[in-house]
Amino acid sequence: MDEPTEQLEVWCAGEDWCPITSTATLIGKKWHTVVLHRLLANGPLGFNALKEEVGGISSKVLSDVLEDLEAKRLVDREIVSEKPVRVEYSLTELGESLESVIQEMAAWGEEHLMPAADESRSIT
Amino acid sequence: MDEPTEQLEVWCAGEDWCPITSTATLIGKKWHTVVLHRLLANGPLGFNALKEEVGGISSKVLSDVLEDLEAKRLVDREIVSEKPVRVEYSLTELGESLESVIQEMAAWGEEHLMPAADESRSIT
DNA sequence: ATATGTGGTTACCTCTCGTAACCCAGTTAC
DNA sequence: GTAACTGGGTTACGAGAGGTAACCACATAT
Image 1 (cartoon, each protein chain N blue to C red):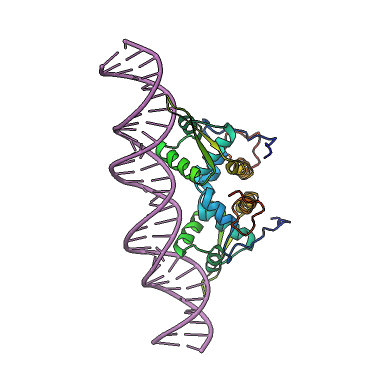
Image 2 (cartoon, chains in turn blue, brown, purple, cyan):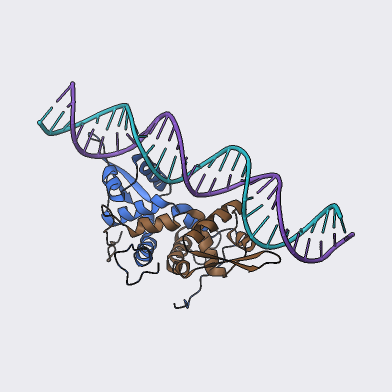
């Protein structure tokens, strides 16, 4: 394994503010990350479409997560039509700026967590 | 807003396995990420030293988090000395491989969540 | 009227997170 | 000795996030 040439700057620990703690407090939750990823990849989505995309999430939890992400200005909720109530969820600019983080997570997951399909890089 | 030139590959949604969901299930927790970051940045640490570095975490939660991270093969627990019980926590290779993810999170946090304290590197 | 689809809410329960207190071993201090 | 301190936790308890199942309101289709 190769040692990284660049070190993380650590002005976090005893100090008053820390980027990792802040970021982890924002998106350090299982479903938040997944919801952001789906919105990032599949553009604006309605509630049920998003629920389908995420997979394995209940209406209640998705509702909670969306409410939280909206409060944190990462997701935008837009009512498109009133008669048959139609809502679209999309990322704000701040939400879209998380793309690099989400991509890193996806790439890492593919490399290190891939199930038995590909054994060429398995570390068991 | 600018469209990203590279798209995320989405073979996640309806499928059986998804790298984001897997990764989020592993490290999608507030303290897990912070603990990994501190171990990454400050090398092997004892329990109380790590607690100090993380800041704001209780013994119980840190204990739980370390136990979980150890079970997930991201953190290594080594008893260094027996006389006065001395323990060192460090990252496994798998844990160290998360550096890119953690770094992205730190970088994003610095760019987008920085409070008003230091404006020399602020982009707001 | 019944069924389907969209966008949720409500009740309830568990699992994680968090606080405060306490325990055990060993080492110095008196 | 006993007390106090350090290192590494555990226990009891409670708040909060995450999860399940059922249900609601509205609209269109049959």
